[in-house]
Image 1 (spheres, rainbow, N blue to C red):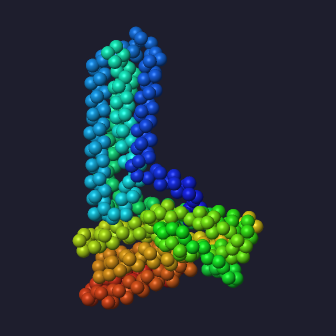
Image 2 (image 1 turned 90 degrees about the horizontal axis):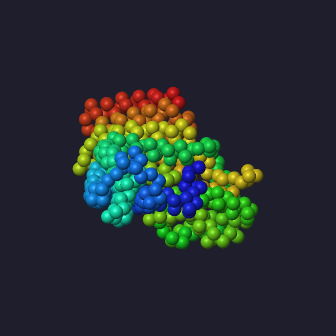
Image 3 (image 1 turned 60 degrees about the horizontal axis):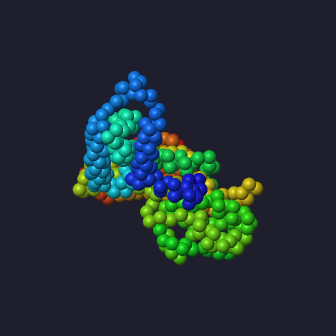
Length: 432
């Protein structure tokens, strides 16, 4: 079952907290200030004995200490401005060339967050130590640590520039989004039985009571475990009418209660849903698929017309979809410890998942022989690993591609090329 059917509000809050350029950079910057106080205490407590070899090595004049610290503090502020500027430039390039919804993955990049935090920590450290430098008091240890932090910041900045230069390469970003999608799929399929076509038979035939949403927005998480506990406590059954990624409006039905569950307070039930103004990648398979598909669609747009980027996206996407047709979607039922069905979840079927990925790609590549042929080959690769019960889904998409080719392709040679690719894919499917 998807992680979004188990996450509580606190888990969602922590995930949101660690996104962007606020929490981690501020946390690292504050750690720099704390480190400065510790280093100043070490200087004043006489950790290093005067006259020792280490003391002589760290010896520096008052003017020298002030010059070093002020140089480090000033340099860090300049570099922080440079990092922010470079990050915004990368965001602009990514939004224009790859896809605007991928900006969230850029903002969540730990390298960016650590870079800003480390530079901020070095700046605050140097500033605080500079404040305590007196005419007769020179914090030798503190100055040495400041120099060490500056050296670390320099090498980390080099790593940051290398990481940024790689992230704007579209093939690398396609690989990262595919890896994220694969992780979401593996989480969806983790320790779950395969899809059962008779799942809905467990829903009671008695009339149910609907619970409506009290807010509008995208559903990002549903606490399925809590729903099961409530249904068990009241000896009832709960049907979930929406899924993570669904957009709900105020007054829209989100649950249907049966039997004893009809006595549960609606406000208590609404707390198991988490909604946001934007979709979140955690547990939302369709959102992760759309990120991959968006790269291909943008590449196929008239303004860009980059067929090979679309082909790369299709190739990577076929690996993730192949995992789905190998296993199938998980069961929609949550049972209690006595194996009694308590909750029915709205789960995407294998057909829904493949439709979300393949229909937009087929429609956008219609008339493009190069991309259409690669899409057929991707379906052929999935046929090599799919279960027999998913064979008809792949055949459906091959028929749609064939129909589009007959309508859109004028050249006889192009039609023959597509026909050969379709024949090869159908032969592979025939062996399933």
